[in-house]
Image 1: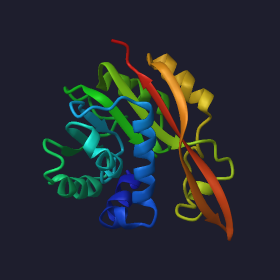
Image 2: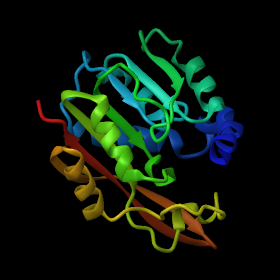
Image 3: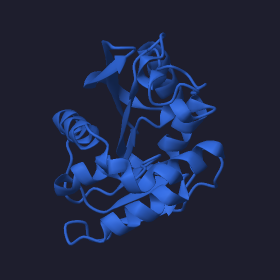
Length: 212
């Protein structure tokens, strides 16, 4: 779709935008503080772009599959993953809403700022549950409710999706999908300058586990 085309066009310079690497590092630290990550764990990042978040966790995970709907993002991710620190990592095109479920199952499903681009976020959480091995974890990072649309105001003023999520709604969707041990933490505080005014937009980390 249009979003995939737009994100493909931005892929080569994606990691270089000021603050993106720092945000990924901070979010990675928030995930490590909550989940018992191990070097033997396999993971899949959904809507992963260039794999910024996964790469920030490279010293704490086993092989990771970085997936995205934008071919340009996957191409850049594939090139970046050709690194001795990331043996067995891969990048491929995958649409969590439309593509058939891959055959592999993972110990961790990761996603950062992708869910607000989805048409049916509740259904995608059910798919995330299916992608997990029994006992596997979900780490979902997205916008808390942003009713004024500050997050996208300057960079994507045309954005029509949900301006963040109510944590209680996400909790309900996760519970309905079958997740247990659901909890919320602050993943990162995004600072945006909108019309010359500094606005803080919190990003939540929602974690849960597929029962064994």
